[in-house]
Length: 527
Image (cartoon, rainbow, N blue to C red; front, top):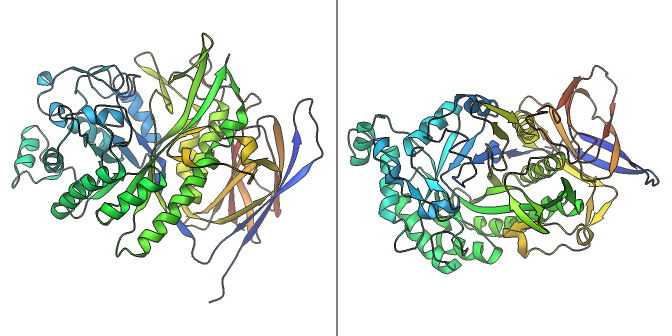
């Protein structure tokens, strides 16, 4: 059958805002519908919880005593979060799951090594899983696989945890114990992570090589798989060499390798410094994911059955704020307009790299770098990332379309992306990174959604969108502001809110303006 293609040409006309002027240039974006579009896994819109001493769980999702806060739950339901990772993160290396079950007045309060706070175990396994059910998300539990003689978890503890969560109340000891504590029915949790950043010199664990971790993962994953063949298991990924070794040793028994990426932004007096470094950081992550994709393609080509995919287990844009002549990392810095462009850029990468990227978990949904920030004990505000995630979850699902972008930009060397984590091994060169980033998806109902991001910090873009034959623009969603450093606050919670408008024209084109760091989504429907 001859390949059927629909093409959208998007002409993006750019001019520089402010006192700087340049000759207008055009960026051309071509969107092609392939014969068999690749699916986008909605799990890329996942989130993660960790008790990091910044009111993410206690003082965020719950009060200080682990009681779920209804006003926060109500907001989280709006996001339709597909998956939630818990309890860590770095804290998993010291987390003992048995301390978080049973009568709450008997649970210990301990000092945490990782983030120098406290864990009172009031929001334990049952509380987490019941909360996941309430917000309609799939739970993903991470095992303590540390190798510290005092704090490390063991394989038998992991097996007992699975049995407590998923075992039958009538036939297993773990299930009987869960039923005795008030939950007779199994939770049927499918996603289980084996370890966290075992390669790193942090947390209550000893650093492992890829060979050491791969050997232990083979034992853990193989044992779990033999007893619970239906579970989805995630192993720790890292660099190319690390992943190659881990796949060789244990790939047959895992479903995902996890990767971690943290964009780094410097702020001085409330303003981002060297914005190109931040705005083009997703491009460096994508270069790493492409390299990992080739590794996985080689490995999966010789593997029968379910292919191993990637889970970007942790990601966000971290802010380092100038304090006393020193830039210091903080989770208290609000999410700003430039964060919208960065987060959308990361999500666009996950879409482009689908289905090889099968899950991604932003940290965190509440407080920290969150989508929601608490205000006092009974109120909360939505950050601009709340609106971004909500709209992407609603519109940017289905199947990805082929997109090519040709236009002005900046080289990788000049952009010098600042992003920490697994992609530090990637060196950016003279590759051209266009100022406009674009992806497109097609819904099961054949509507097309186009995402446009303006990655320049001082230039607006005039957008002329030429529609494919038989399509018209029906709706536009935009999140932009004249100040890329603007943010929502308790005093002005509506500084950054999206605007939507219907489009009644039946013309074959649509024009729009993108301010610096703007994100604009355009819905196209068939005539």
